[in-house]
Length: 127
Image (cartoon, rainbow, N blue to C red; front, side):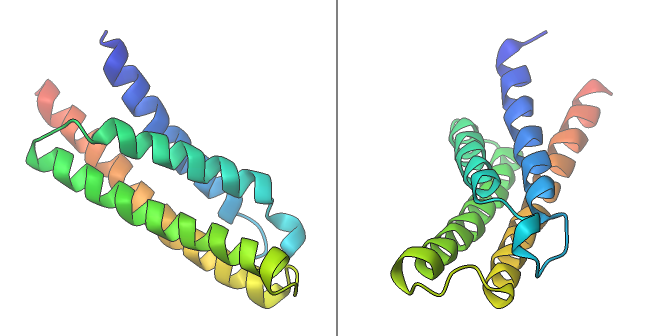
């Protein structure tokens, strides 16, 4: 068993599962979405992106692209949360949390694509 591949797969799947955990719940109810979970998703997704930087294959390029999309979506969601609470001062209203969850949902789609590519590549390499 290759420890590097285990760590790589761990962070990709952890990013997906944390993202699902953040998005689940009523999309317009701020009590169902934790700022700490969003922070964890951003950090773990950035780590997963860093692990994808070394691969120079076509599959590696696709994995990196999906991860970058998820990073941009999650950073936008975190910035929107930060602006709503600390800059504008409106707080987390149903309209704000809906937008944040929508951005995190876009990142979720990118993470799902990343995991599907990873599983497909693993199955093809075994055959």
